[in-house]
Image (cartoon, rainbow, N blue to C red; front, side, top):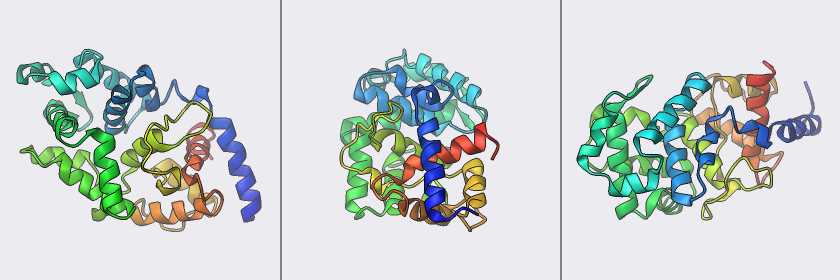
Length: 257
């Protein structure tokens, strides 16, 4: 087992190896990289992150299909669509996320951009209103997202850490929006949440690597595990702990660590 300094050195090297533009093309983060305007970036990122489970080529294909149904103009479509425009989503399917879910997501995003100052406004306000406690903030985000009449089945597609979820995809989305560095992968276009306040995305692969490295003792990949992992990463970089997501992901997916 590596000591803490050796582990930090090892993981810092892996961050440098994987946090590069070469990371973008095969990853769901490539979807928001198709756009240059802030609202298009964050909307496409939110949708891509929402369906980011399963095989990455399928995630990319279906994310691009969602955008095609929105005329590849996500912000304009969200704000200006008519009810009849949503009929084309009827046949959309990505695993358990289907046309019913897509239809409500678009309606909810319209409400968010018209009445809640957009995705950044919702996440930032919920974060500030909960004194930076991420689990409570994400719980409140979900309440706003589903404040309109909606199919109950769609609720499962927005995680709630207050119910124990690791909220992997939301934490990944927040990493994309908040983290700032000069590597060109994450966007860093949101100002009110700081990189130091993010939680590390946790899935099967990153969890397994973290356990092998002694960064995570908890066996279940839930919110308590997210907190344990992030707390350990903070000891190696207090200002930007979730940069190590690149290292854990790369070791798990690319190196089968």
